[in-house]
Image (tube, rainbow, N blue to C red; front, side, top):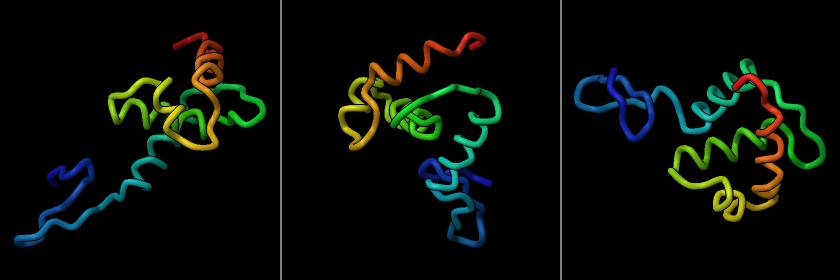
Length: 90
């Protein structure tokens, strides 16, 4: 197995077939986070959205502040940080 463009792939002859798509990878990462972290949220800032913002910021090497500004219909960076501060055992 080789890794190509952030996707898992397997060699078959001279071509590589993606095994995991970007959306599947995102879903797997979010599922792992949900299993290991519990963050009580309210309003527009649900746990899934919170994790999506954090993953987007981390994967692009960007700040939470800028990521929240770039995405539409997401909580503000202050809202994200407020919820992150609730995690006691990080």
